[in-house]
Image (cartoon, rainbow, N blue to C red; front, side):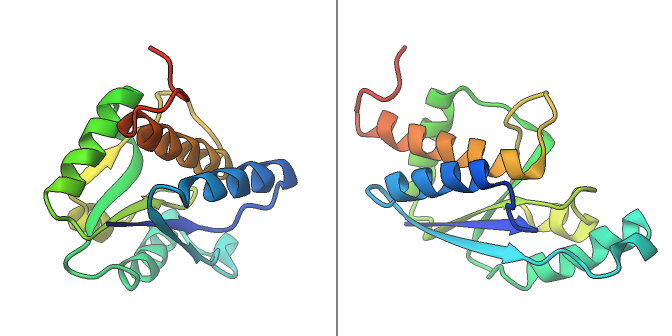
Length: 157
């Protein structure tokens, strides 16, 4: 199985880049992870919120194929404990899913077309985090899920 992470915009804060790189290295031991960066729109300040979501949505959907399991990181999504998330990922793996695509949208969220394409929405917290922080936090949680599945001591009950 492969995991694809689609992010709108890139991480620019050095401390977050360092943390993401650390979890990228750790995750390689468990699963193949591909990262796709959708560039931020040029002249976005001249566009409405809906126009931004629509244009970003088109770019996101171009990166997805029909067999992908698509999960949006969305504040209205399902919240899991780390153990529940690891069990959910394990179910996807054993069900034969070849690629799970996790998407972090832009500042205004997702277009309706992206919502319609997704099989699941996942919320990391009811708190609000910057999109750059969400990437790092999500990578850490993915790593935690795989250590739980392998019975490694990273996660403590």
